[in-house]
Length: 104
Image (cartoon, rainbow, N blue to C red; front, side, top):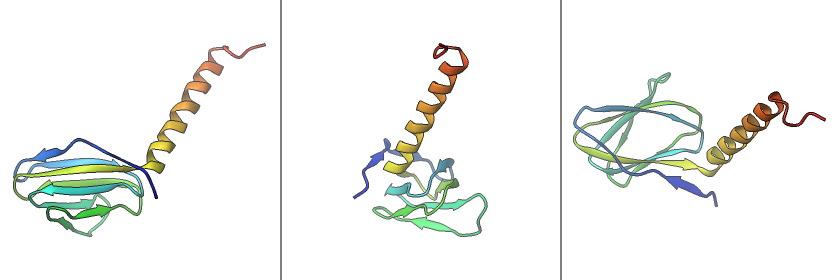
């Protein structure tokens, strides 16, 4: 079972658009209203009604629009969070090494 992290609900007004950089395994859950979405590099349409979700199979920029007043949750996959943690840790380590903190 993959652990996940849910964001706070995001409310979109009718025709309001929001973009998410998502990773493979991340999901969008329609909490209320109706959502339309697509990846910026795709012609595939995604339409979600309350209770439906879309799980991304690949990373990319997902554009989501409220077709009426709608709310959604972005659910980050545990792999996504772990990768971000490791990248941040590596960045901090290299910055400390660059500053000579580990010099003998």
